[in-house]
Length: 555
Image (cartoon, rainbow, N blue to C red; front, side, top):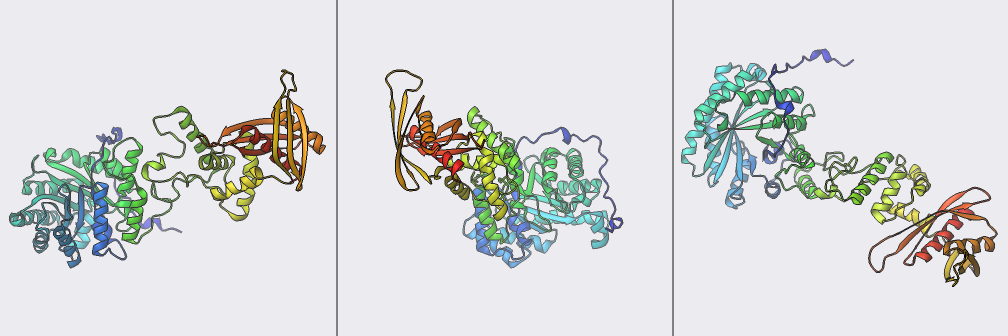
């Protein structure tokens, strides 16, 4: 039995004054990518310098204005990477790089050495403040932990005196989610006063969910409590750095934004320690899906995924939101049918807004193709097959034909699994448009009588029967009726046209027409569809009749 009794409930925040549940996200936060630090340290095979530079340049193209490039005092590799960015002049003037450093004097001194030549930098200091770590890791009380943060701030002020660029201080009470709120506020206020923050010299307070310990609403309560209790709030940029231990990092981030956060630190596609950091792309695409400008250039998810996988040597899970290969794919028949109808309604209504069932955004808006939207397998229904034929190939099958052709595809999928669109088209051709044996229409001459009598159309049809060329004639009230009557007499059959439908396959002078004939064998009661294609609509209709006759009597 699962030994759940080993674990105790993490307390919630008693905060009945909360306002965040009534708020809405209306604009993008300040984004800070930590892919090159938090993300890189979580890789089994960390990026080499050139891979880091490729990732850095991707982040620039995506529009990040704040990028944490590493922990330069922690290793020579991190130090050298920062120097490469400086010496190769790879940092744009409008981009602020961020460096992480513990509250230790020699590390802060080394950090400023690495920063020489940088025009503007965020120096991110931190120390752990949680009750658990104070007890079992450091064996220190609140006063001693507060002093670590204050001394770290003083050292940053000391060493920035010899630095030519501009410095913004960021402080993180690490393991904030496990820290008493009054102590988190106390230590942040001490850092704020030591730094001398003002509206013109803002300080960043980063309140990380270093380890997710509770439901996202509790994190939102913690963020709002801090937001409303900070001293001189207009001197503060409130930042969050959520992790994903409970699988709710995205929800925690969105609720934190409702609670007053100004800034989000995260990684592309959620790469980070343990179960990962918050996935900035998903949060940004979520905003985009609500008509909010995410302030990032994320129109091409394929390029992002390609570079991400190459640099990190990790793969994006197929069901990953927005980026996964299967997220714009529908296997369910009912889903496929709804997507088909939604797409058609969009076209018919010329809708300004995207409104398609099961597709929260238009895949083409983020560089995805319509090609993978619908995949056909044994669980797919008639709507899915019809959708493929329409979207991929322009065949708008009559509603009555949906099940007939879907049964053909389902029989194949039950043997082999998924059926690709190309195979669906091949089966459509072999079962309908190229169903030309044993009777094969060759040519027709249609003449109209001068008098307007009920049977004023004559058809003279040349065809082959098992390879032997033959001719028959028929008279009717139109070309289809004339050919039907001629076939009945020629083949000794009794047939009736139940339905007839046609449409253009393409625009322009060379457009072809598709004609669908629903034909009944009067003697047996069996009915089926035939399909004909031609640039001449009459010829397309006759081919449809021959297709249906071959299916009815010779299959």
